[in-house]
Length: 112
View 1 (spheres, rainbow, N blue to C red):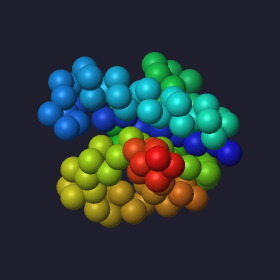
View 2 (cartoon, rainbow, N blue to C red):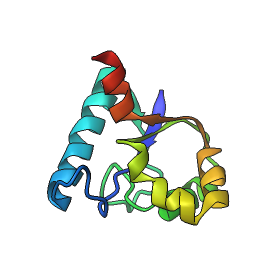
View 3 (cartoon, one colour):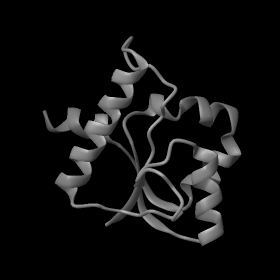
């Protein structure tokens, strides 16, 4: 399975500091990717990280490469809710490049 993961570096999760929120997202996503044996796809060779932090940049790269992937992974709906509210049509176009959108926090809570 091929996928891309998105980390929101501007959202504070559950009253945590910004740095702790980023770390929780990274750890949860990395663990999920390893457990599910997902191959992370890097669309832009100039990208600094394996993950995206800006949904607009992700959409641009997907549109430029005309790439369809298996999954888009995020920590929780809270990570993307501001983007969805502000750009609902763009969100629909963005998620159309993926067979499914996975919220890792929800997957972990279903296992417990």
